[in-house]
Length: 323
Image (cartoon, rainbow, N blue to C red; front, side, top):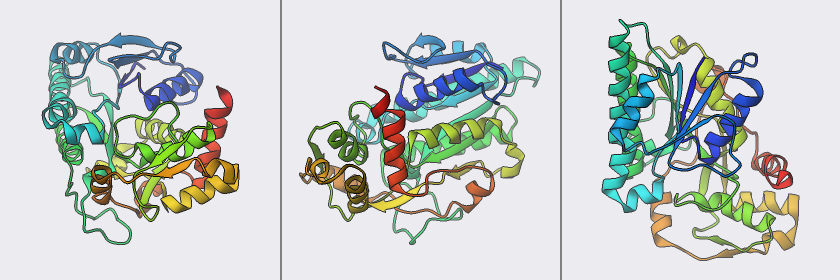
């Protein structure tokens, strides 16, 4: 079984590639993995590396022509950058998605309908817009309030339609904010959620740009890899053509994040967090959902952490203590 990871040089893509190298996709056989991204870490995960951009139609057509059996689509411009650079956000996050699906449809038709890859797309809770109920259920309207959310919502609809037509066998998984992310901060508006935990644990000052009353929805990188693996192997007939699904997570306030950090690492670590309000970040975050009822995803076998302290411990085990 051949596997393609678009965005394979990123944090989640690298963790997924390592998981596939260690365990295969089903836990038995090892499969050839191709990683596509604009760059890769110097000591990256195993797999064939191809450098390129999803904005390059020729590169996407070449990837589709190889007819990978499983495609993980993780590549995107992150939320803050998509909001500040309107044209680049739509080009990277939406137009390239259409180009890839069209290339896969061409391969499907050329194969006489035999080629129909499993396509796992990492969508986002940014597809939702307020006003919100206390907990967002599976019937809540997708009405994004940011360019990033609009781009993700468009892709969900395209993937559902291409799946309905039988060109691909797709599922969109709406990821919570992935926390605690190792490495350096990126341009995502949500980056500080990881920063206020990661930086203090590494002895570095962290900036908190929003009030500590802000509530948000989180899952660990380990949970994200589990979501992806399960989405690639589950029976998608269970979705009944409702192919976009909100993933489980932990809802907590920034204050609760900080108290979990205090309980694990102590007051001296927490003292490295400094409040510095940022109106742009606050405006973006205010438009995001805060809590979900994910009973459908859980019944289908998806699972995440039970509290934020568990998320911190996973960062300590998987990243901080392994450096």
